[in-house]
Image 1: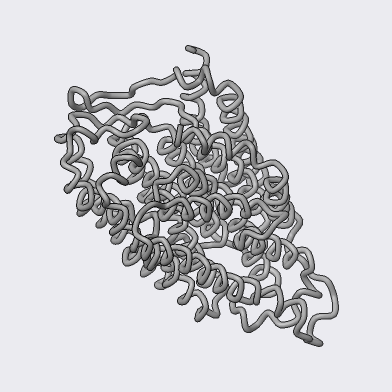
Image 2: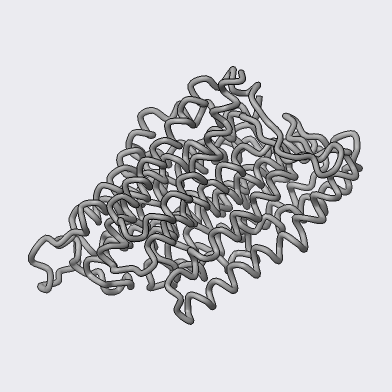
Length: 489
């Protein structure tokens, strides 16, 4: 047990130590990048060890401080946290490899600062993943916002600073206005903020107050991208592509939906939410976001902006699953955190490869490019098919359980049919605005592209990793399925 506590500590400290070392290697590019990769691989290895020894590891934990009696900054291992940590640490490896090729090929400035802050952000993700209570999660949720802000504004342009302002104002503002009051309310109602299977509020909170309190959390955890507090996400697309990948697949948005699912399952409890009837009202937030963001994505010609609104829509699949509060829906929502992460990061990597190689940002400029960049568009196609939930790609399983969960929803028939229609409509819209990109590249003729010209090798390796994992997860989704299942036991 003591040994596993040390491994838990290591998962939090490894990226911090890595960041310190990386920051001192500005004049040694190759060493700096080697340290980045060694740090990422080491972190993943530690999380793998915690996963392999999960039964014993769930007894491990430690406390940093207790500012108020009964209110501690502490960390512990649980299956959901291990799942999030595995996703983030594995994709940090792929993103680091990709970033080496991208940052050099794009001649980005301040690369040492970039890799340093990237490691700091991953440290924040690990802290969120292993938070033992809502107070600890809130602290590092905010830390993640602050640590990723310099990455969003990395280029230093006026556009980057404008995007960064919207990023920090929406995320910090919503936390202060909604998340913080909601957390304080829970503390005074339940007299603690511990994450407990089945929740801590039943028996202490009048069911009629579930709706306004849960609404505060939905609005306060704006990293989940629920409309109307979603605009920070498209604004952050001014950042370099590896940062976009970090925001949309690894760190920020996944920290948002991870936090929201934890609040639903471990603070309120799915049974209490269902009994209160709050979910039949609040479920409209993800429904509107799913369809609304898909319609907006349809109108975007910029590739990264289209992918950004796709992310907004896909995140609300997870929120919807949590609010449906059925066993299959929560399982599907939890699995979708993983399946979407691997599929979406492949799409962003492909978009970055197109920018680095062909210097194109718009969908309308991609006609015939599939002949010049066959590997890149193969990656984009596979990522797209997984996001759509097509068989032979991992995204099918999370969509399967989300749909199964919606079929098991016992609310009003109007809500039931609305959920099914919105999911169907979103899937059709997703098919058009995502699949049309490789279709244009492959099947619209363009005499300008006669020779193969792919991104740097490091980019291709980084792209290949999540793509292969996406395929593998169709044939063996058991790792994430078993970890997701523990939320409903």
